[in-house]
Image (tube, rainbow, N blue to C red; front, top):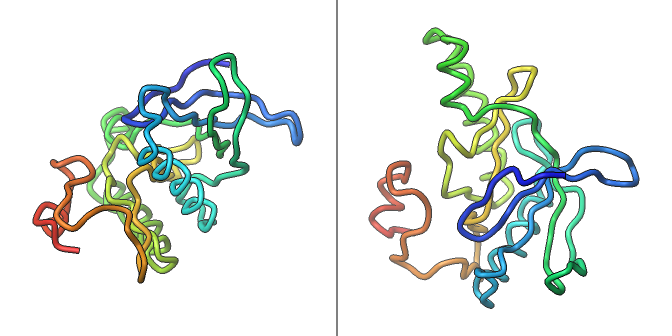
Length: 176
């Protein structure tokens, strides 16, 4: 229906799913990012999100490949979150300290849930957290997420992935 945004590797559109009929966020791999490494990262994002079912994390409904006017492209359809980025929501509603801490607590619970299931987001920042119409934070964009455990080769040791201003000290140091 329309573009919602674009990031380093994907473009997200508002779309309508036929069955069941609902609005979805449809993420497609950007054509200029379609290297084998980026394709692997894109497919891993869909796989990792598919492991997660938490009220604070946008859910994946379907993933696969689609024929488009520009050729076959990977996609995934996920929960469309009608809301505002965390920082805009806090400013618009002039939240007091208690309300801000409640939001941070909910985001931390979602991150903890993901960690318990072997997924580290690695780019948790205000623009990747939308607050929906009920005031529920939803964590989005697991594009640089890392699976935990043996055999995980999501990045090389020492490689910086994410947004520097929001990285943990361990991430900045390249300490796995």
